Structure formats: structure tokens, C-alpha cells
Image 1 (cartoon, rainbow, N blue to C red):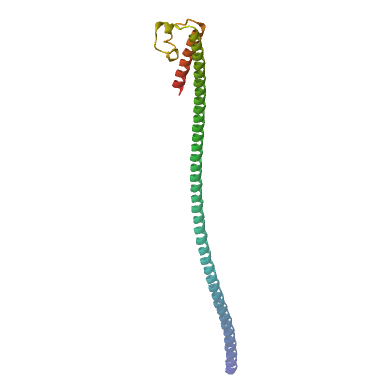
Image 2: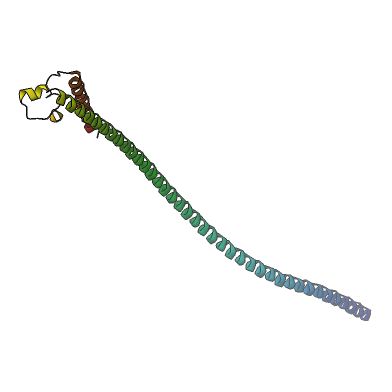
Length: 189
């Protein structure tokens, strides 16, 4: 019976040993699987770390490009504003120049008008002086009778003696209007 007990105990011990070996193998397999997973996870962590570094680098590059583009945009807007200010200044100068030219043209036209009025008055004066000379040759004028040394053409309208004939009256009136026209022309100029 002791032998049977020993055989049974040996058999039980042998079964226990096999069970424990199987359990140890299972644990070993699990341990190896965990180690493999750990290696795989470490590889994934390294790959993820590499990807993260690459993304950070690309992000930094994109940020630098965005800042450079923002600076270029600000510079471009500043240059556009400066160009606009310069264009406005040139436009103002053109307007001022155009106004000055128009004013000068007006003054030239007014001067030409005054010049033509003066020439017309001088022609009328010459015509009347010729008529007066013709009348004076036909009859002596009152200034000749007084013994005046001045020619009638040299007298102003205020210095002329009272008219003795209609021609002298017309000449006196013409000289008066001519003097007024010349004075007005001189004041306008």
C-alpha cells in the first residue's frame, strides 16, 4: 500500500510537474508575447516620435513662411500706400499746374484784349488827329490864335480848349474816352 501510495504520489507529483511545466510554458509564451508587443510598441513610439518631430519641423517652416508672407504683404501695402500718396501729390500738382496755365491763358487773353483795345484807341486817335489837322489847315484853331506852342495831338482831353467846331468836339470826346480806356487797361494790367 505504501508502494501504491508512493506510485500515486509520484504520479500526482508527475502530473503536477507537467501541469506546472505547461503553466510555465504558457507564462513564458505570454512573457515573450508581451516582450514582442513591447518591442513593437517601442518601434511605434519611435515612429510616432519621428513623425512628431517631422510635423513640428514642417509646422515651424510653415510658421516662418506665414510670417515672411505677412511681412511681404505689409511691405506691399506700405509701398502701395506710398505710391497712392505720390500719385495724389502728382495729381494735385497737375491740377494746380492746369489751374495756373488756365489763369495765365486768361491773363494773356485779357492782355491781348487790352492790347487790341489800346491799338484801336490809338488808331482812332490817329484818325481824329488827321481829321483835326485837315480841319486846322482849313481854318486856324483857337490854340493857334492864342499862340500856343503845343500841337493839338500833344494836348490831353483836359488841356484842349473848348471846341470851336464839331470835329474838335468829337476829337475832345474821343481823347477823353481814349484816356479812360488807357487808364483802365493800365489798372487791369
